[in-house]
Image (cartoon, rainbow, N blue to C red):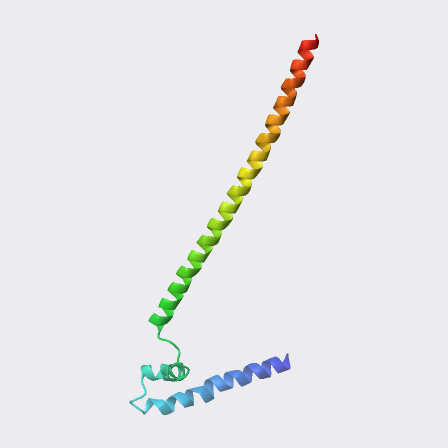
Length: 115
């Protein structure tokens, strides 16, 4: 508990005394404005050659569209495969049903002829 209190005190000390002093030095410089707050991020993005947002959005949109097309193609392929299997199963069931029905009719005809 003592360590936690010491850490909390140290953190508040840095917040209150150290960080505001760094900002006071920049208040005298009229060149440093709101736009300078993002200067570091802008220069770093420029140095690592990160693309501008419209290019990135365009790439994302084209990748999303191509991914959508790929998913649609896969979906159509799976649908065709499922329908082919369904038709095959349906044909097998029709054959089994027709064989069963013909066997029942043959036996019933045989039963009634002997009476």
